[in-house]
Amino acid sequence: MRKSRLFGAAILSGAVLAATPNLAAAAPPEETAAGAGGSGVVSSGEIPEALAGADYWTSTRLASARPATPVRPETPVPNSAEPRAAGGPSVSVAPTKAGGPAATEAAAAEEPEALHAGSVPRPYTNYPDRLNGKVFFAKYTAGGTFQGNFVCSGTVVNSENKSIVWTAGHCVHGGRGGSFHRNWIFIPAYSSSFNGHEPYGRYTRRELWTRTEWASNSNFRQDVGAAVVNRRNNIRIVDALGGQGITFNQSRSQTFRSYGYPQASPFNGFLQWVCVSGRISDDFPAGVGPATIKIHCNMTGGSSGGGWLIRMATSGLGYVNSVNSYRYGSTPDNIFGPYHGNEALSLYNTVRSRPA
Image (cartoon, rainbow, N blue to C red):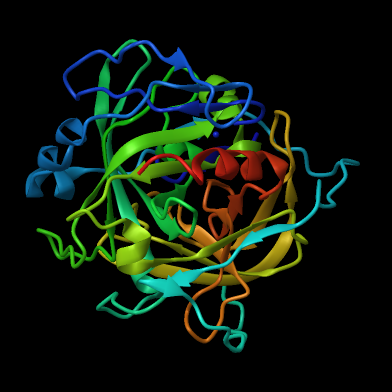
């Protein structure tokens, strides 16, 4: 039996769940049904910004937060007759630069595929670097037991509310037996030697969202999550920094640029890294939803939730088409990500216009 590991901390099909507004030391309140986002969606409502966790993250906690790497107890199906075609019409939301729409630009030159990740040069003030960031959160069980402080990665994406960070489902919720993470923050363009460098500050979460299949069943086929983040100085994150595009129901045969902040050895979580790879094959973990996608990449825990970009332009703007999700211990040079099909599109459509 091969063992697989998550890259950050928890994944979903069917309905969508929203995060409960809770404090690190408090038990989470009950989730309540909400009509926003369509049928089958539940939400606890918004969390007051004063309780969102920015002050929780001292330099010591930032430095000691670790990537969660629980073992997935299942054997992947190596071959399957499942359809691999797109599940519906393709949908794309264009990227944007800070303060306005991006100009149409030529496609960036294709980079050669590489088995190992390459470090992104600092400072992270250009595109796409400034739109990649590090996620920090405190993880709790469903019963309220603290499990530690953890890290993931995420990407700012464009939307009507200009306030979405796209990531993995397990970077917002602990999955079966878990709860929505608390003290969740996003630091775009993060870099560090110890105390951390935060050129654009911290963004606290207003709401966290994921698919019910992840929260209830830890379904790797739907390991997608989103955060609606609060404004900084009354400016929305996309207006301040720009946002990548996002796309769904595309061909599986793409050249992916996978970004993240790997922290487990041999990495240290201080820097951005990128892998460039085409699709190798599909994977068929248990659960409903589309097969996942396998690419070449040796990034480790902490890179979970980092965006897979396609169709990148010379501006550095492109389209998020998956996220880092999991890997198997027997194949450390490969990463798997969820296919952006109708399930991921449903999640995006739920959050794209949420108040921010």
